[in-house]
Image 1 (cartoon, rainbow, N blue to C red):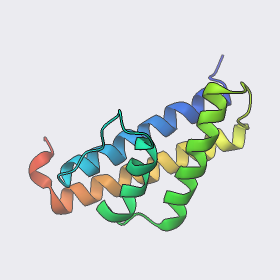
Image 2 (cartoon, one colour):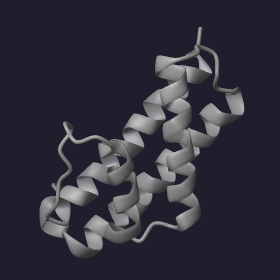
Image 3 (cartoon, rainbow, N blue to C red):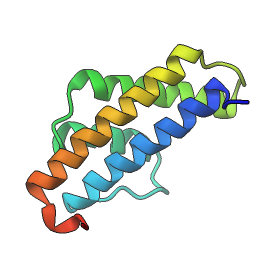
Image 4 (cartoon, rainbow, N blue to C red):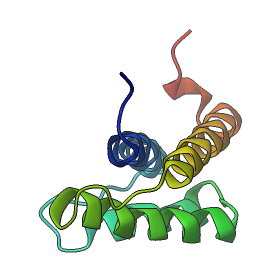
Length: 111
């Protein structure tokens, strides 16, 4: 039995968020988890750290809202396509951050 679409989206969203957080840290910044709106700020930072395409940042912001609804309001709110789309987005963000780290902060990468 596979994961529900809700969980697929949540797991992929969390992966993308942690990747964005890693880029932010590599750039010398951090967002406190106690700050209201910290997920929003971390996602937005992708525009400035790795110069992520606006369409990807905007999509991640929409997925953040979808994840919130799924986690806290209504189970089953995520379609199978949305789960897949979030996974694809997380992979794109991971690849973008990885390339940026190699180009600008290679000393932070382990072999």
